[in-house]
Length: 138
Image 1 (tube, helix red, strand yellow):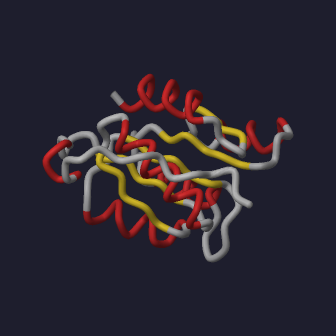
Image 2 (cartoon, one colour):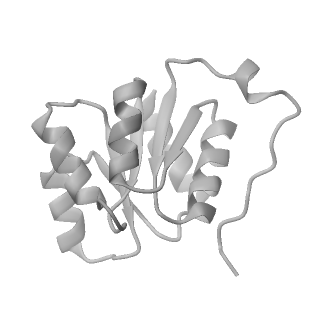
């Protein structure tokens, strides 16, 4: 059973509750994690988009402007570290929070060196997600 549960949504439609300058991109290959994060971000007042790998994430970055990115490090097709390196090469200043089930310092150090501003360890606690997103993306 997944530790990621969908958060209850408000009665209003998302389109009426969000400002377009508070867009967040969630990139993770697991759908339940993407849904958990998208729901959590919506509860915080963000408009959340999602992608299942770095290639899809980079494509969304070409179509929309974002206030922040939450990025998994380990994914098929294009992993999070490779996506971070693409962002760094393009001098993209969007704040990025990387996430991983790998709790070793080496993964965290590589991500910070590649431009990440913060790190989340899976499974993700909603209160920690809330604190980091409000601190970095507003």
